[in-house]
Length: 377
Image (cartoon, rainbow, N blue to C red; front, side, top):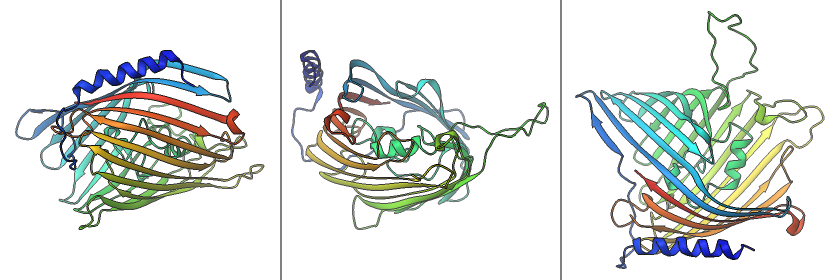
């Protein structure tokens, strides 16, 4: 159980936030997304937009398998972005990330896009491609709890890499009730493939094979908050994250999602379900060739500025994963200071408790109790 010291810090953190919560009780209503950050117009053709998000966190973690415990404060993530509009058709997006989740500050996104018409654009660079909806396609300020579902993090760590980005190019479309994207990419966020004619070996072997993926989601009109869709992809890069038996493996992956209320604070009752899986190619000496996970989340808004959340996940891992089957439980509350003004997720405090249970009883259990703030600017 948490130490007395941690409980005191948790209580103090909570009550330091309480005075910031609006005092009047209002009916819960759907919240709009925060407005873009600072806008600077250079001339009639060039507009710069600047903004970011920061997430400080206080957490206590207990790992029974390793018999280790930690308590501390840090910055989980911070991101700074720049978006440049050049005329009506060209866009450039760059985003820096740092913090405990990312290490030293580095570019997480570097994307250029060309608008073809009101619906479609082409984009290229270090990009977010088709993938499970719960991962990078859910923007950082809109996370339901302390972090993304564990099954989606496991998917990323076994496919593209922890940030879910890759180097590639694709086609992207958006209508009133749908969104789609299709890309061809290098299959990993770790390899910026290039060759220079001036190099001594401009075409040196890099073990890269191309990958492709597609994504589609639909929000039927007449059903407010409802969204469903999925993705499918094939990756033959055989990058280091896919290794088993000393060999990288090509794989096919896919996901499905069904949401009723995608974003925190968007409606009084929210339900989100998703499933994802990976099937690797056969390599000699490795019999376990698949990964699968499911996640279900429920959220109940009790005030305009307060929402209770709970999530259960099941994950069937494979070599070289830690255990064959795991269950992850998460419960907590989102508290918003900005709900009545600039959107539920602009200024938010999340308190969450998570338990991760592997095979082996209580000796294979992990606990985390965390208090995480969020400011979008």
